[in-house]
Length: 305
Image (tube, rainbow, N blue to C red; front, side, top):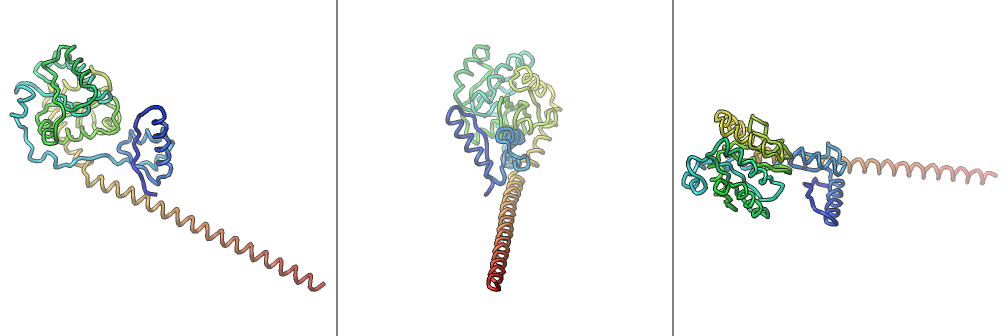
């Protein structure tokens, strides 16, 4: 049986039970299982009791040429912030687990230390009204801008316009947006959780913050805003890591290897069954020969009498 990609999703009630049962069956029956991070590998091992060696980590990737010939568009940038303002960017769905509420909560501390900053939130989702209300309640109306959904071209432009990209998730199996930001040349701040925690090395190719902690988030963002030398090193290392570890050629090779391993194991299992069947047939044949021989001997003895 060929390996399958399995990822857990949180639901409730009968739907949750059905999903859990189906996922368990798929992982149990699969020769190999592919997940996109060590975090998900640990989750599957914990939830389904799978052997570690059966779970293969093959991360998601990005097109390493995505930002080739894309430069900072200052006219585009002026739609969202003034020239003197540093843009803190969030890109993603506006849902609780993405942690945007913690990023907004971090803005008063950021502004108190670095006034010329603006938070741009790109994306759509069910929390938008709640997040707007939070920003207004904190008196951040002119310092938090909800840009809404952006097409692919504008996403590229926005990454190039940003000074810091922030992904403060409270739950994140992988975090492909962080890879896009790193590749674009924007320093990133991520939560120390899930797949994000594996992508970023603190102070080397990005900054981390404690998940759900607005104060920690503000500190990491301010560190990048004040330290341009650190930003330059982070950007250089981040782009190198993405191009080395998250290009599609490497990911395709790793996936191909996993399929080869699964196919070889399947063939080995088939050969082992065939050998066992042949041995069983030989044992039956030998037992029949012995039975026939004993019957023949008894027949001769009866005839002699």
